[in-house]
Image (cartoon, rainbow, N blue to C red; front, top):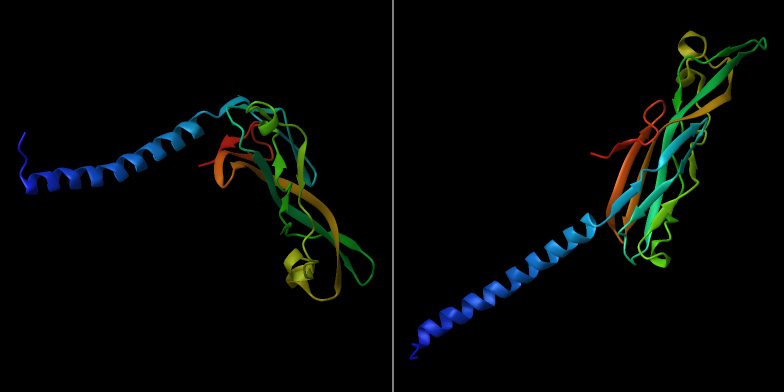
Amino acid sequence: MIVKNGEHREDTMRKALLVPIVAVLFVAATSLTALAAVTVKTLPTATFSGPSVTLTDGNFSGLGSTPAFANLTVTGSATYTCTNQGGNASPGQNPVPAQTGSSGPVSLGNADHNGRGTISGITASVTAPPTPTAQQVGCGGKGSGNWTVTLNTRTATAAQLVITQDTTVVFCRNYTLGGPATGTACP
């Protein structure tokens, strides 16, 4: 076959452009396949108790040998009692946002169990914020400085579970106080 010099260059250039495109598509397809392989055997169940949320019963497969880590983050509110100079106490009128709590990364153990990972007993709690002012808590009308503010309760009202492998999120679930125990998928 006789090929003119120009035609051969065009064919070589097409191949040179095609190789990186095919490589990118291959990497994208295998990444999606790896994420799609994670199977939820049992959804983690959340229990709200005062300032804490505990997750139990989560069971996953298809995680492979790359370690997977769960992190539970909890938000909520704090209420305060207001005591006037006469020693009379009354509840504050305004709940104050509590400080967010986190379980920190907890290994699912999948790297040692053929790609199966479990969640059992991951807990996170909200903590009291720095003591708010009488005005922030809603003591005595406009919140004069004649009140002493004392922490009354801390309540966890929401939680989010995020499971990652390396930097990739492979599972996410939101939980709310009074909502379904198995939560809802993250948007």
